[in-house]
Length: 81
Image (cartoon, rainbow, N blue to C red; front, side):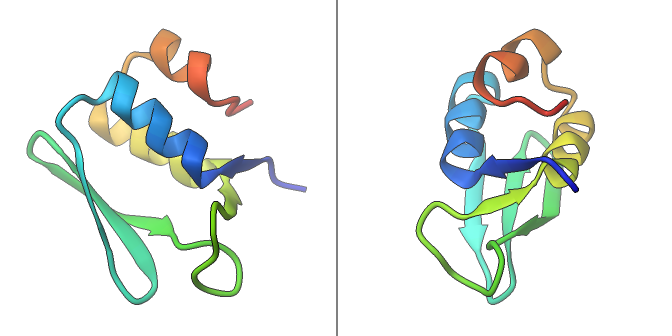
């Protein structure tokens, strides 16, 4: 079973570790932009829009790798293991 992460925790992590990021909601996912990169695959959550949904940690790990975020900072805010 995949590890789940609350979306509010992801936003707090990005506030702390990716200062200056932007996010935009589309019909099916979030588009998160940081520096010159866009991560277009962050889901809205199971069954569409929900308040603070849980999403699979694999999406967050992929976004962290793409943006090159500091692992120590990320681990303070979300548990991806």
